[in-house]
Image (cartoon, rainbow, N blue to C red; front, side, top):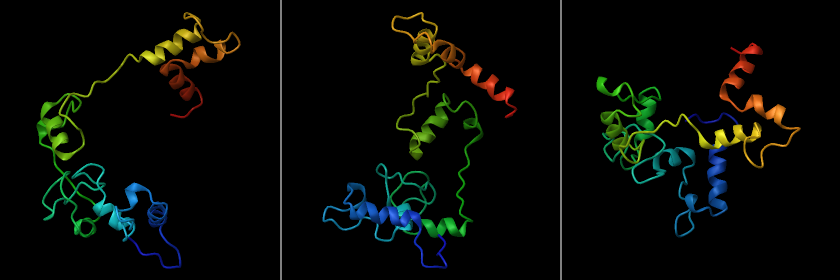
Length: 172
């Protein structure tokens, strides 16, 4: 973290202090004292959205040897600074492809806290709400689009129409 060279405070520090002053549960302890008195660096090191899972994945655990999941590590930010503000985790070659259904990757992602369960991620190609919208625009359903709105909705109710419009405008 860089220290400002003038009389200002980092935006994140102000938000964290504001949360504590307002008494928001995520920013105060049971006794009412601020949960992150050190500001944003304290938040980055000690905040956990779930037990063992915080904003930073590298050097977790009391000794800094855990990856992804682990207890807050007071030395974590210093380790990031020493490593050029980066942390790297190498996946084995068998986990590089088809991550949505690759059981080895799903287990690693669960162990690191990216997923709750090592179950395949279903990619939904047919979206029911979008189809209902299309049918309403085409007036194929009861209670569909008003007559004056149909010409506007029909061409924009498919993803391909948006891509065609995008290319026509030259935004490639």
